[in-house]
Length: 414
Length: 105
Image (cartoon, rainbow over all chains, first blue to last red; front, side, top):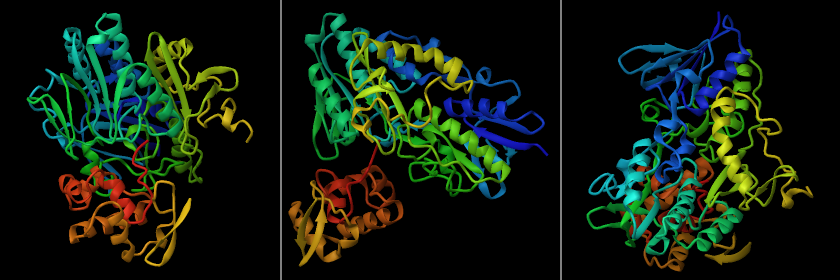
């Protein structure tokens, strides 16, 4: 009988997994089903550009179904819960889907309700997020009207999707207000729960330097207890206050709510605990997880999902064949950081190696941890590659899932 | 890494004062560590959090973040800040003798 492979989530991870698996198995060997609650696939890296008018909402949304290869079935339905004891997905409305292997790819959701006041007074008027399509679009209109005052960019809690995006937002805001000739009338403040600009020491220092250079104030170790829209201030749990005229808040994140309704599957934030190197879920051997949905100590980012994809697909196949799993995912992440003025930075790292200076992927390549125009072009080109290379499940020539050491000065001697 | 003496026992701590080897920690050391951080008396509520931190570390290899503590320890985030002002996750990890929480990537 053909294997039944069910993939929950038709975003980056679910789509690339389905397409890679479809190439791996003939139709007679496996059925592949992707489930998602809607048919709107958002190119999430594009959300950063929408508030500045550098991308339009309709340009970054496509049909989920149409990104899937022929022979992949798409079910448009919300998941109610997973019953791992009976290898069955229960959908809202009562239908159910039995499986031999399940892949969890339902990403992360914004937990706006975890921060008192966030969606209260002033929400979508002077308190926004650019982490949703509606939020990013509404923020564009608000920025257009903003000519003077204090713009506060606040990360509520980690982990978040694309941990560099809020920094990029600050850099692009600096550029945006410069272009409009009002930069000297706008204060930009970056408020983070971390003890520095970023999580990893070398990159944190480099990024803190860039914030200072661009005259962005940095407030660290701030745990947002309340967003007081009426009082125009963020209030920290430790009593500190940060006043704002316009607040751009990245809400706390959690896994998909259905994970919380599925006994034994998720952690306290509804992320799915999985093996760091094989991506097999702790819940049961025939369940795997990919991308933002996992609890892995890797960035929640498309590049991570892309690199995980190859190992995941191999392991689904090995599991179905009764072979030992491939434990080679190393936490590799690779992120362009837009710094404005047609420039960008590139960082490349994994579980063990923090982002270091040098070049990617080898000594001749894109500069790492350093602003350049080439990196900016790389980021722009990536959108084309996302739809035409990454989602169809193609490899990038010369770019492997494992982090390359060549080109990183500090590692070259190893 | 440096060595310091707590309750008559030599323990290894890192540059920031977090334990390198959580197994060297004993409950008798906690009041001394707390005083160093400006907490004069450890109440039952403090101990609820400290024991939870030890348990989480033993199970997951890292201390929880404030948000996870608030969801799972039985002590709200607001109260956590009252018990351990200026950052419950780090302060409680320090007093409970476990490494600095990895927190986030």
